[in-house]
Image (cartoon, rainbow over all chains, first blue to last red; front, side, top):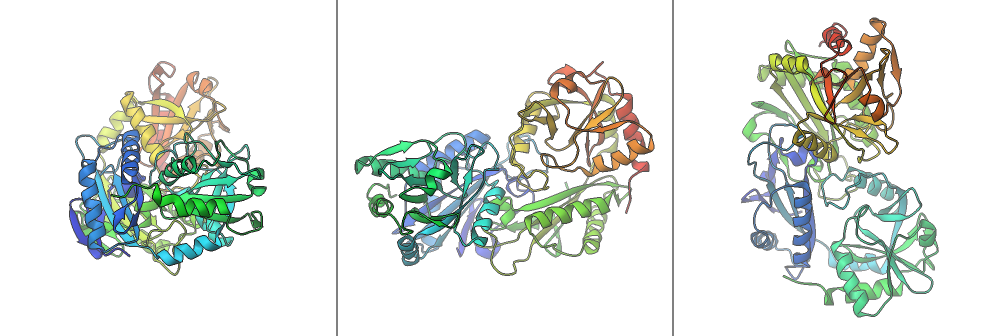
Length: 285
Length: 285
């Protein structure tokens, strides 16, 4: 657990790191977030996370709490104070504190900014990747604007909990037409029998993952074949490989879907290769 | 603004009323709430609110933070300490504080409980009711479990803000089939040309409003005709009356929908009568 957090202008010990009960993040889930991988104390792909954060804020018309270059300094300071070499830095911006009323507060309410960081166990993550993870599928039941990285994550919480209770790590949402949209906290990918890598194109219905964006560069550089289109659950069941992408997991092989093994039930070579190559194409800052 | 809030076991001055940055309400909107009208310092229809709260918690498998009878004592104490005669008491329960991870925390994490209360201006509310309010309509875009009174209210926030920007007070969600589901923070009702009162039956797609529940008793007692079924936007445009129900507004006449007057653009007699009679059928505790 992170021991020092940045909260609205101050670096605070954990026990003091709090927000008002009338913070709109708490009462309305009226806020957005980013979570970035930290490697060797540096932030992976910060420029892309910053661009997505700007877009999320813009879509909700929440003011940027500070210039992105200053936010970067805060992130680095939180990483430093928590001595995180490998881990995650998390930031959350909400519309700020105001008397409870659904509509935006009148006047110039300052947005809230919270940043924390924590260590992850690198070896354990590598071991997980070497074994692969299981996913389940659940009906897509989220709101329409999941392209905004908002903290209104209750459906994702319930989906992840359902996965855990069925012995899996992630849940994939499946829309009414039988197509996988994305995971509860990751993007979904398959490799077809003839070696094409398939993932949904960014747009309505999914969050544009940063890891997935970088992975497109990796795939292009390695001259692998990519198809950006929805894939069906039936295709996923029949896939040669499957994997998920997320900042905390990079490329994580999926070895079972709904209790059925993917191919031979072992992590696939494409997923493992993409995982190995990934950080050659990442930006570190 | 409320000056004293109850936060996890303590009555705190407003400036100290905070929750952890890792409260799951803040990071995941993993919590529920209730807002009850206060009249003469008493809570209106508390048993029904308590029952709905129990259901919301049960649906999300969040433990009750304390027995409902104790919660009632806390609510009354917050009302008393804030000297609220007429107003609103608000309570929020979240899954508690835990290291960020979508799935439910392992072990016995205590749920968080926050209660605050604030005065409303009775005369101003009566004046608003005498004039009626305008509503706009927006496409239904929320998640499927809006029957749970959860704090994942971002779509509602955006709908209410859209209403304000179009000179209205409330937004009604309209589903793909052209039927009104409910308001962003209220239930939606119309009175047809031949005097039938129409509102959607409780069930998937809407939150079962407490004020609406009590109003069904009022309607039955007054021997008015009620039809519990979805009504279309076209029916709403052609209605003789329209109104919304919510704990903070009781029965509030709607005099315009999408900029078009409802009938003659004045509050209707059925809505005003139901508003007048309402508290004869309410429970006070």
